[in-house]
Length: 210
Image (cartoon, rainbow, N blue to C red; front, side, top):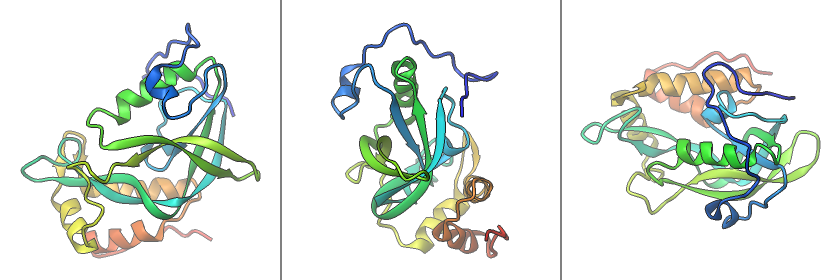
């Protein structure tokens, strides 16, 4: 599947094929296509041009509300919680193949989008694609030593953060519910997040997935 910038999508420069040092440091090669693994909003709102999109699974990592939000879904005085990719388990998401020509601009865009607070650690993970192939995919994993890491909180405390959180991007509850609904639209069921919805709003979402 090909997708090129849509209205409102940032213009990405592809005039240089040089891969900057921070990207080379995690193993991204110059002059080659790259894969990007999305487990949260990147799945339904990537914001960058890609050549191919496939469902994918990474093992040894799981999706969870493991990051305190002090801006988009909360404040420092009243924090919320947003998604991170944390160690343990497995995670189903979407992998995007980006052509070598677009890779430098896409990497710049992703660093600007995902790394302002450096709460994530970019790394290459092995992703099993739905066509049987295995690729090295860039993923933004949560940094456990960061002050915004909240992955060790009990579920009831995470639910409390989500109920209270309101930030520049709106209510934290809406972020949680919309995440589960978007996953449903992509054919991905995350029972942990569905259980979190029940804790937060007192009822589940009828996703009707087979």
